[in-house]
Amino acid sequence: MNICVIGTGYVGLVTGAVFADLGNDVTCVDNVAEKIENLKKGIMPIYEPGLEEMVIRNFKEKRLSFTTSIEEGVKKSDVVFIAVGTPPKETGETNLSFVEEAAFEISQHLNGYKVIVNKSTVPVGTGDLVKRIIEKNKKNHEKFDVVSNPEFLREGTAITDTLYPDRIVIGAPSKQVAMILLELYATLERPMIITDVYSAEMIKYASNSFLALKISYINSIADLCEKTGANVVDVAKGMGLDSRIGRNFLDPGLGYGGSCFPKDVDSFINIAQKYGSSFDILKAAVKVNKERVNTFANKIRKTLGTFEGKTIGLLGLAFKPDTDDIREAKSIELLDIFLKEKAVVRAYDPVAMENTKKLFPQVTYCESSYEVAEGCDCLVIVTEWREFKQLNLEKIKHTMKSPIIFDGRNIYDPERKKKMGFQYYSIGRQNAI
Image (tube, rainbow, N blue to C red):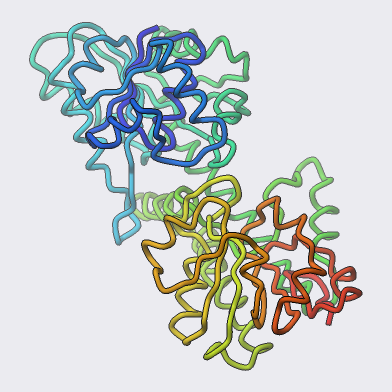
């Protein structure tokens, strides 16, 4: 099948690369010329395990191409995916300007029947908006249909999530239109659900918001565990074995971040308010999430006495492992607090340091976790990278000024750290001192 993907961010580039790998002819379009030229050279705009190899392989085999011309992409394709950014406005409402621009450009180049697929995360009713824009501005009588096909990929596992999704949601105006997408996805042999367009648009927001609720819930449980002497890890395990609840997203920590959950939850609240629903339970989840970093910083401040003049080592800057994305990352909030209170900060992350340097050039960026620890008053674990779990902590202890660890992701065992001579603080567990 001939496919056009408009937008080469996380969703667009991964979608295009995977469809090409499945044997389709894919044209990826982006209006940033430098990004397109880099992609032609095999230079990725993002870090994602396995993506570079997949893009280079399919580009060489001429199943995947890159261009700044929407006209080129639309005219040679049967299915056109809109995978542009939908950033939040200050009000929490979703900014649909990039979707609107894409719809207008598509309208100018229709040369036959097309299926226009909203892949971006968009509010209910966006399918109607896209349809109106194209219908109003198209230059001929060519027919088209608009479909909602929300993505559920996670940064760091985007390739796997696209190849082996839990479900494929297709919101289409008719079964005949849905069959075109069914044919495209058939080789994946994954569960598919066909709905109307409105329901498909709702499913994405409802899913992400529920997961955000789950994260805020277990973090509230963690706070209570610290006060009562319970162990949140055991509590989460006991809860997760209930098939009605499940273990995923029951890991306590510093709260949710990244490019999806914060903006999607805010947007869902905004959508609800437009329809007269206050959605108080979701507002409470947002409130809990916003308090996480301050609560953690207060724990560090209480132990150190003050941040001023202290040397703090940060392990992890990306909002989650296996990505260089620092959007809404908890490290950014912590760095802002530490630096404003005149701490000296040393930091290390396997892939996210270049992105962080643009925001915090005054931080000392190190080449390893061991270098970070040298002369530090404490270490702060922010991102649960696998390599941090395998560190030689005896070596680290001897290079630190004070053997204190604040573990924001519960990657270590409290009793073991106590026996090693560390002052160790974690989330929702009895602190070993």
